[in-house]
Image 1 (cartoon, rainbow, N blue to C red):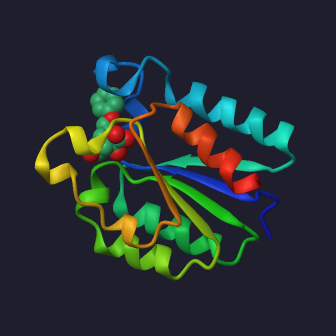
Image 2: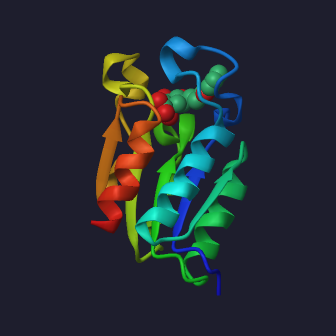
Length: 144
Ligand code: CA2
């Protein structure tokens, strides 16, 4: 049984945050974002476990593990897999807790291929376009 109640899951290329395209994705690194979330979780009384993978199967394995390790909710930015992955949708459908989908950029202001999300079909809430603050708002919404 994991001691973590909220899983924050970041998909492909999000490990590059802070190094390129700051006008789209901001200046914070993924470590900065995760550290803020762990600290906010401590303030709010929930434990946060942040993970990132560039591999679809690893993301699915992590979601599957969350079904049985005590995880109550998932905040997920599936990166480009948002727009392609029925397999991540299926894995989230097998998870019983709350799911919030977060995107740093406003995907609806961007290319048409970013306008559709498989994950939104499962998500209880979706936050787009607010940068790293979107993760913070998602965590606050889960605890509220
Ligand atoms: O806006 C988001 O959070 C996205 O999920 C980010 C994905 C993109 O494919 C989605 O359409 C929207 C891409 C993440 C790439 O992250 C980078 C960060 C820094 C430098 C290069 C890529």
